[in-house]
Length: 177
Image 1: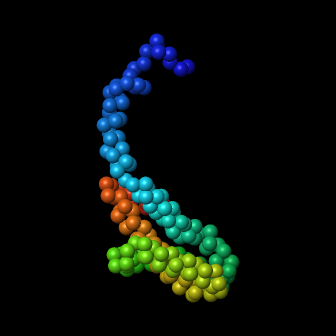
Image 2: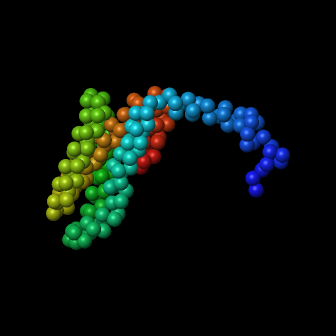
Image 3: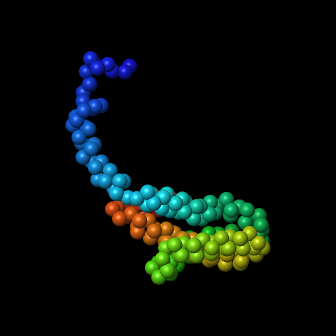
């Protein structure tokens, strides 16, 4: 039932009631934050979120790929096939300082493009691999290193475009994992 004006309202729906004032007071910093950022900053944030989502997708769905790799390489043990995913998780962590130095020296745009090219070429080379050792190089090392370049450059781009709350913007970006 929709209340009519003659019915009693407790001040929560309209007018400057205590709840309305409390919400306005608590949301005012966020309102300033949203209006302070340029439209391009929001595009960067959305693109960074999607980049993180896509960049981490292959590592996250590797168990599905693991079954296919076991069929492809029946003579290899499970631990040798699992080493590919282990490398895909370890190499970005180990190459983080290199990605950070590259981003600082060349800028986040060039670093992200370089990482995208390395990642694309390594996935293309992976599709032609017929030996597990080649997967160690293409997926385990090259893809992971290119992914590291892209992800570090993405976080730097977001923090440079968000001047008001860079930690909030970085958190949104990384939540794409």
